[in-house]
Image (cartoon, rainbow, N blue to C red; front, side, top):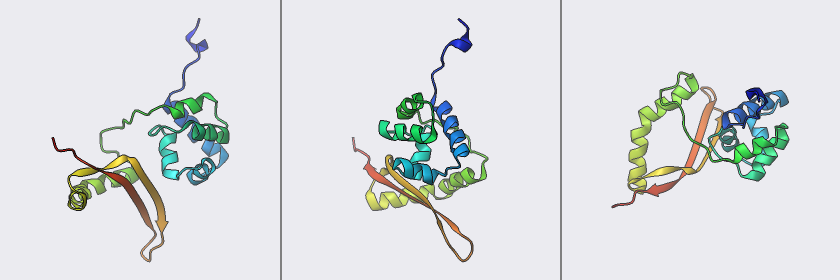
Length: 155
């Protein structure tokens, strides 16, 4: 049997590409997709690009909304492998976020430790919103993050 005839399983990257293509064809925004499946735009995008697992009912709703192959729902529900390039990205928007962490990371850490003690902010029990804030000097991007505090265990 030829390899071309053997059905290939969809990967998270395959499904992400299908979603991005369907989103573009449908003329939908992330806000619109998120509203349709009952989730936030931040979480929806993250799950669609493979960085979070969707509950089966949310995956089914997304697949129906975007008219994707049914097997995409199963892939969307699989646990992700959260791996990304470890080099500093060159995309200006993403680079600036790295720059913010580079400049303010130690400050944020110090303030978290001062307020809560030795620990971290969870990226699992986590919410984030991105919004536009009008400003006299030009509109601002507001990124609001909220994560559960996790104290380190003393051994």
